[in-house]
Every structure is written in structure tokens, then in C-alpha cells.
Image 1 (cartoon, rainbow, N blue to C red):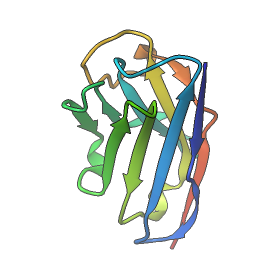
Image 2: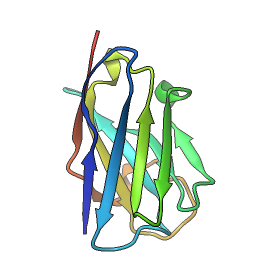
Image 3: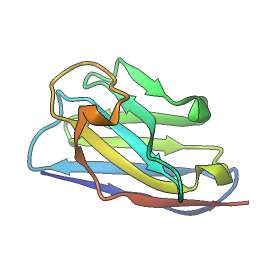
Image 4: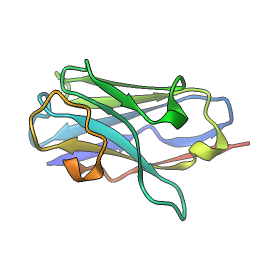
Length: 125
């Protein structure tokens, strides 16, 4: 099983990026997926999560109104649209998939079994 994250890069403050995470090796169409991030010197934190149906969404307070998570179960892919980026959004972003089949939007790292390799997002001021 592999989760391949892509779409990171360098962007100016106020700009946008769209992250993608394509899963292979098994289907996650009935499993929660999420994005986490880790900034230098800080612990990894939840950014957003999505239930398998897409009906249940979670956003950390620091991204509400700016980021949007979505998924395409036919493509086994989850996305993170990031708008109005700020320098404090600079981090390595990781996608994750839960092994349990549930229509919940898990927020705890421990609920996620599969992790992508991370993609760097750098926002300049």
C-alpha cells in the first residue's frame, strides 16, 4: 500500500496550492482520510479529515475558511485545496488513510495506519 502526496511547492503569501494524495495497493473508498502537517521544531498536527462519503469534514481552526478537503473515491485520491496561504502554513504536509471502514472524520493520528511520504509547502512573506 502506498500513499503518494504531491502538489507542494513555494508560493507567496496569499497564494494557493492544491495537494493531491493518490493511494495504491488497496481501495480506501470506504475509509476516512486526512491531511496532517509538521513544521520545523513542532509536532505533527491534524489539518483536515474527511469521511469516506465526504459528508463529514473536520478542519483545524487555523485553516477554517481557507482550506478545503475533498476526495474522489473512484480515483482513490484525496485533495487539499489551500487558499490564502500564510507563512505559518509552511510545513511538510502528510496524507493519511485509516484502516477502519467508517464514515467518521477521525482527527487522531492513532486512527490512521497508512501515511504518505510528505510534500513540502513553503509560503514566503
